[in-house]
Length: 172
Image (cartoon, rainbow, N blue to C red; front, side):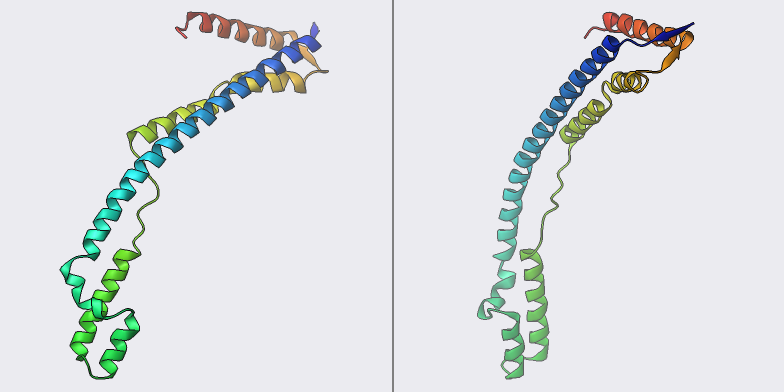
């Protein structure tokens, strides 16, 4: 015997799938927003700390000899006019490079800790959430005007019954 899937069953499954998709997308957006706010807060605190450390490094007495020079070219010109020796020029250029490296240092922009990992896991859980119900609705819609074997339909029905029983047993 063959059964025909009713239009009402298909519409109900599509409606349920759309509700699940909306709920899942809303949860995913909330998780992403929470993660972004948390990372922004932690990055701001880390950036302030890094800026203070960078200022402390740049104001160290080690770079005091560079106060006479506004740019690297000034050091080269001072050596060219015999104002400083070659060794002094090399030392000042090395100091200049070191200071520029500190100035141009960019902190790692990616922040990660246990909280961000937990939020990422929650997000990935949402991605897979309700996937079986959504796939079921798609299959029903694809087979809307096709006959389904009784055994297949019974298997689908039994699967739905098991899922309903499982939802009733779950604490959520």
